[in-house]
Length: 276
Image 1 (cartoon, rainbow, N blue to C red):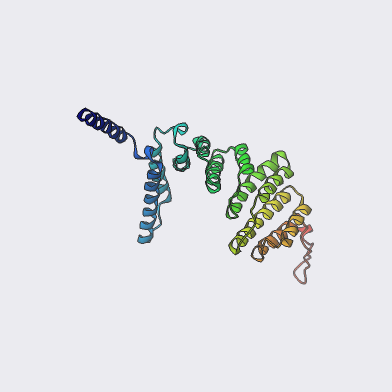
Image 2: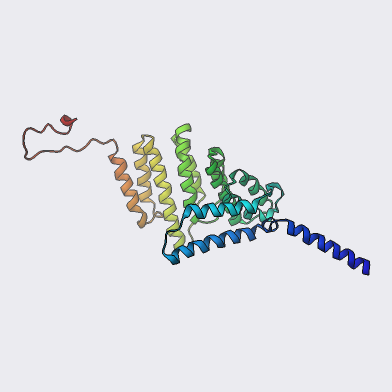
């Protein structure tokens, strides 16, 4: 029995020594995440309590430094799949965007639920945006599933950004198709909060689509989109004002200035055309 106890003690000592040689974050990225989040929260609270403006640049630099330390020597291909999303967050904080896709693929091996899958894919989208990888970003927008209505407005904002680029290189209808694809994935509203979120999402969709047509010089198509928006009961009364304002602006673009008649003055008034 005694030799077994000695061997067991030696094995335990070896394991403890190995654990001490590794950063805590390597064993559990959630520990490093909590430390960083707690630090950021504390610094913001201190500034609020002191009624001073927080130095955002300094705070972000410190967060990046902490994240870089946490991911030091970490290889994306070797992390535990279940911890993949936590590593993704740390790598994003460290601005190591080039490793996010590999970490996302690793995380997907853990078969996450709909919310986890969305969070990981959205993080990929953010990384592609930061790296200027348009094709990868567009592919992500096309494949991402929306677990709820609240996520629709966020993805539509990215879709609108990339739709402009697609329209410039592939034609306006290609950009419109990207927006239409996201709209088709918006879940149905099941309660009042959902209905409010759905209205905002649809307003974003119609606005982006109308501006896309307007930017391409297709004013009539832009007006048709906005008329459809105002006829869509799901848009909601609260969002109509912005859509009507956009319709007015689009109508005015390229329209001749109204005639200005002079009732009295000194000398002759040739009209706006004559003043050019």
